[in-house]
Length: 161
Image (tube, rainbow, N blue to C red):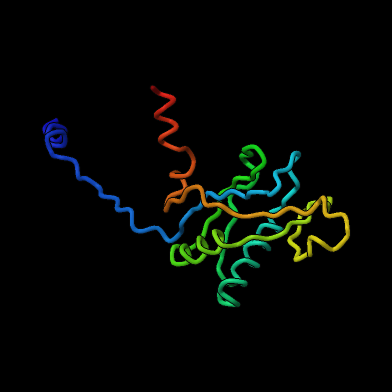
């Protein structure tokens, strides 16, 4: 009985958890179509990965094409005529990828049934170009933690008020 009293009066040992600098960085990006289209053309994860690799190769050569990109969520949210998704990249490659996405523009052929593909088609070639769309990427948000992109705290606060 005396031993039980001694356990209660003894302070508990605290455990510290330290969050170190994360290895990955997350980007919430949007694809803009010009001209805007409805219904939205199908864009597969493979087509996106090809677009990312093509953009990195054009700006940074073979070294840029080796950057590892994970597509975590795509087509989860659709705002108007734009696709919004979340990708993951290693922290040391963040600025390279961000600058590439900001500068890259491509022509997308949306006539393919199962997936869209990027082409270098001349728009004034006399063929039916109604399925060709100019695309660009826009970085909406970024965070070293995935939870930072799940919900915009400013919008959440507005909902509470």
